[in-house]
Length: 125
Image: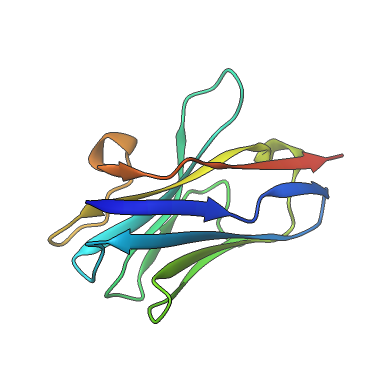
């Protein structure tokens, strides 16, 4: 079992920045991938970014490429989502998720087995 806890959401103005944290506990190790997803009211949960614990390669959705970055603190078992140049359309409930992987990094929600409770991000115009 893997437990995930997100934090760091809040209300910021457009153009601002936020850093979300995803603290992992349990059996998460370098055989896992960590993904970030978001869900706006009335919309499907969508992929934001993902990477493996053991690799530097990160995949980003086109909508956030160049504005969001993912990094990890292996000592703290924590994954961060740095969000810059935020836009009102980034407003959503943000989730981190984990799944055990062999090679490729999953980008669809059905591929992930463990989910956090979500943290709300609201961007005002």
